[in-house]
Image 1 (tube, helix red, strand yellow):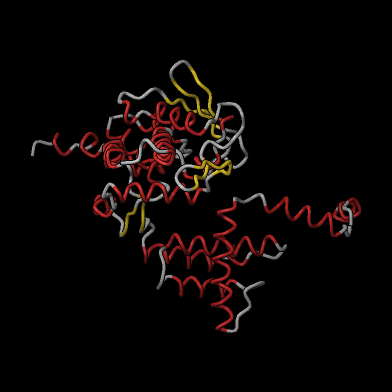
Image 2 (cartoon, helix red, strand yellow):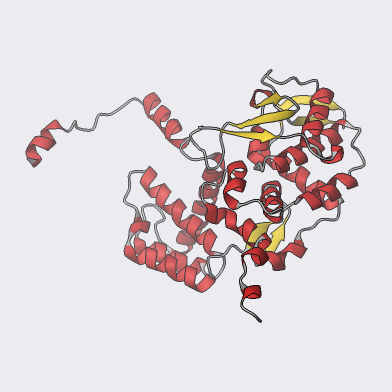
Length: 338
């Protein structure tokens, strides 16, 4: 039987350099750009550590990986070590090499690091809730300028739709449609939707004009002379506070805008640390998405309903926002007669 199978298996066939490069580029797109950057950084650190000790970084053995885990456990959080191990695994598998991280000893070392360090995140984005967003918008003294209108639309649309910074940066006018007085927003691709299935989110007219995402977006579209359906980036760069470019903002620019506007409203995020139970919290590109989930939970919305807008595939990921808000509602401490 084995001989018959061997006979039917085609021997390796050399391909042209052009075809090999095409396949390589195609396979590279299986991971997001951020994942590729993160893995590359992890491998540079691992390679430098191996060089100092005279170890080979690729291919390497499970003993080296386990030693590296023990070394990193003295320096970084468990989540960073898990990222390092994933990067080492990917680097080997991508080259057709055996995966040294799949060995039992490596997995045991990773679990030991988890028990020693704890698996709870050490850092977390500060949620820019509805209350804090009113503070941010109230501190903006340039709402009549192109920059002010753009930034207000970014902040309010991102909060209303629980968007990641990359999702905001990727929006085009083809992704937004009017539905009576409201808006329909299509997210073509996201962190949890790498294959581009897409998600549709409804953005209703706000109850307060100053924080209405629909009105804020309309004001920006009018100022930037953009029309829905024309395919241009929704949010673009602005030069000298007046000249609106056609180039889309990067996700890092989105993050800087969120951080700058929050800082101008004296929102640092450090006061959230003790509530979140982490070592550090800070305003980041994720703060709008976290703010939506937190605000909805504080308003009494159930987790399943929240997840339809936040697009969390797993409710345990959403629980970090829902649990603090529902701690009293879920507690039976007041029902045992103390």
